[in-house]
Image 1: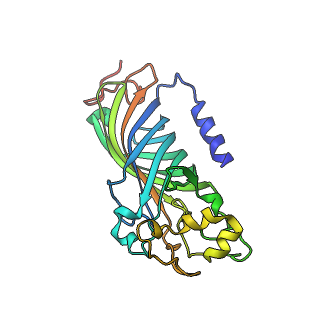
Image 2 (image 1 turned 90 degrees about the vertical axis):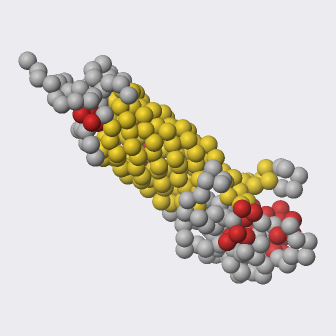
Length: 285
């Protein structure tokens, strides 16, 4: 994580008077896909997403960009029939995601000449997450330290406690429009390919409920399976029964409105001389 943060800080420390440097603001919604939300795209559980970044135009087509993002994600069996059928787990979670991202953007058109351009981007990111849920009294309970699947216990040596800090591969695309020489707005969809399946604290198989309660406390067993809350006659799944699918890693994504403002003193789109926002190059004498 530290090397990427150093790169981001170096990127952010670029000369603020550069005519190719832009300040980027992001605002929109975030979603997640995983064991508690099987649909790849779903807006039912959307939560806020905001971000702040800088971008540097290398050429009329290529831009390097960095951003710090805050996203709130959630998932629940109650609104996903496919997930609900897995022993009626009645599981749910929320998590804040703090992300630092560095990416390269490619613009299909010259926005200085056309006034708009579709674009794609891809890069690398680090993020911090900490899934939590609430008990029947409404108290917030963080799930990682409970080890709800027996993570970190000698009885399950193949299950390690997952890290709150992870790498991701962000990619996506959008369309942007030049309103003035300095101001651009656009709509962007960004996805994150993750390397963890514990964004929602659900991944593998159930631990023995008695052993889990003895080792980690009754709360750990209670949050590992919550079917009793909707069905008093429910039976706690036996040790080894599927709780999630570790083969399919989790995802999160956002859909945002992006506002970009040039910090340079020249014309928009990098301030390169002899160009206009909505026309052909002008003659320079």
